[in-house]
Length: 176
Image (cartoon, rainbow, N blue to C red):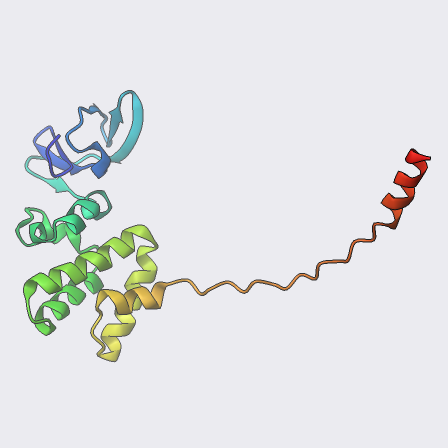
């Protein structure tokens, strides 16, 4: 396994969860899928690629590493795989055009991608589409505000007053 949370199986590259980085894993190859095991425990099943030099990179597997090292995003070999939908790609392009530095755009985009991996990708995508349609810069904080769950209302539950007369009578009978 490489330091980028990828494995190479039959001339193709696959991402695995970042917790398995630098660990020895066992891979079982089937006609249609791969199964990845760590210390005998199943960790991942993924579709098997046919041919040579293909790759399947799931952004959820590597986003935590990239958030910690945002400079690596610009040079990442499989960077194009880190745009799960066209809305994410358009968001990155918009951030790159609008922000003072590419570094700042990368950090914002990685935070958005981290939010998608941590919550619901579809909700983040919807927020991005809304912001882009409005012409609002889809920076990470704005997107996070849109997808943040509403604070739940806490119902007021009246606490009944406890009548201790029954206990007093019971104790009175025991002591007499």
